[in-house]
Every structure is written in structure tokens, then in C-alpha cells.
Length: 137
Image 1 (tube, helix red, strand yellow):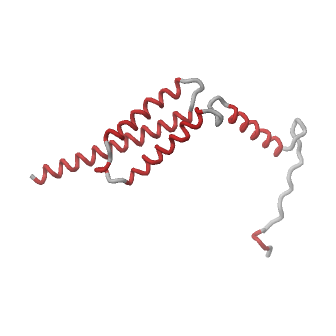
Image 2 (cartoon, rainbow, N blue to C red):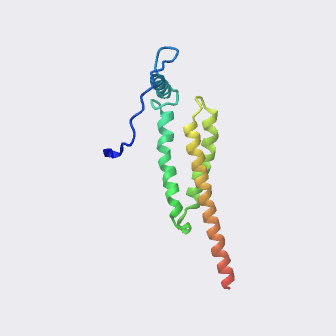
Image 3 (tube, helix red, strand yellow):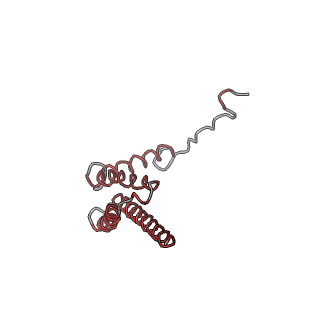
């Protein structure tokens, strides 16, 4: 029995060449490098504020997701309304600006969704408290 989990011999790499004389692996690497260069040099790429602002905004969204485990009576309606409203406004704006910023759109879509969910949780809790208080009378 072979050691270290090797159970069969390694396959030989294909030496077939593409139209430019490159192997398939070289073609894949060239495509990856082109994609990386396109991302790096994009008008909303990592060399611009258009990339870093929404990337950092994911932290606010993550904190709001973490608050899903928070008791609903501790949620702030004005805070969650602000989170949901800014998410909705900036989601629309991210598609109106040049360059289109899909990172900004996605973070604001999630931000709006989490804010609306938190508002739903707070309203549901308040209704349950009001119904139990009414039933106690």
C-alpha cells in the first residue's frame, strides 16, 4: 500500500498545443492574468475609492447581520430605518453613476434587506407585547 494516500500514478499532462503553440494551462494562466489586470485597472477597481468605500461598508452590514441575534426590544427604529433607507437610496445611485458600481449596489441591497428585516422584527415584537398586554386586561 502506498504511503501518504497516493493510490494511483499521476496522470501525464497533455502536451497538446493550442493555436498559438501554448498549452492549455498556459492559456488558462494568460486568461487569469488578463482578468486580474482588467479588475485592477477598472474605473471602479481597487485603485479607487469606488472600490474601497463599499468594501468597508460591508462591515456595517455584517454588524447588522450580527444583530439578528439581539433581542428585538433592544433594536432602534430610527437606526434601522436609516440603514434601510440609505441602502435603498444608494442602491439606486450606484447604478446611475459612471462607472456602474456593482459592489456598491450589492452591499446596499443587503444593507436595505437587513434594515427592513430588523424593522420587521421590532414591529412584530411590539405587536406581540401590545397583544399580550391587551389580553392581560
